[in-house]
Each structure stands twice: as C-alpha cells, then as structure tokens.
Length: 153
Image (cartoon, rainbow, N blue to C red):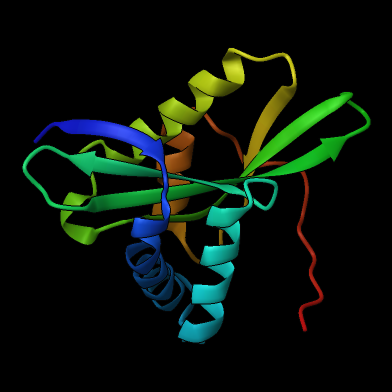
C-alpha cells in the first residue's frame, strides 16, 4: 500500500468527510451526531479556509479518500503567532497502522516547519482514548500540562 497523495479537501470530498466524522464521534466518544448539522459544518469549512483546513489522504488503487485531518487556527499572543489544532481526525479502520495518520501529520508538520507564522501544533483527545494517546506519543507529541474545560450548548 502506498499513500499517493495528501491534499487539501475539496467540495467533492464532503460526503466522505461527513461520514468519517459521524463514525469518529460514535467510535471515540459514543456520540451520535446530527448528520445534517455535520454536513453544514463540513461544507462551511471547505468553503471558508478561515474556519479550518481539511487535509485528506489518498492511497494507491483506492477510489476516494481513506483519512482526514483538519487544522484550525488559534492566535497566541505569548508566541506572536498561530498555533494549529488538529481536529476531525479519522482514518478508515482497514487503513490504520499503515502510515495514513503519519503521512497526514508529517504533511502538516512540514507546512508548520516551513513558515514562521505557525508556532506549534496541538490536539485534544478523549481521556478514555488511550490507543490514540499512544499514537500521538509515538510521533513525538507529549501530554500537555493543560487541562481542557468546556461549556457546550
């Protein structure tokens, strides 16, 4: 298996990205999302890169994408630059542990290393998702000293 391309998502990827997000939420957090709402959210982000940028992975001989990773921007006054957040990460189960996430991550990291505007990369992970935590640690990320709190409507 060869990862043939990492590219920015386009409108024709929307349905697959929505499907991935629905599956990811159910798998990692037991959350059944509203598909119509997710569809609107994905459509908005693809149309407006200021909301986030989806990167997708294609594999040789497979029609369509097999993985997705979105980055969003956070301004850091401490660093006078942007911190990118990895979000909406999903790799089809049959392509896990085959380098798809690593290729997506390395693509994003290459962009970060080539600019002075982006100062770092963060992500959050459900505390119960120990499998994902091990993957992130294996690529050199560390558990932050921050704890995330949220208030969701």
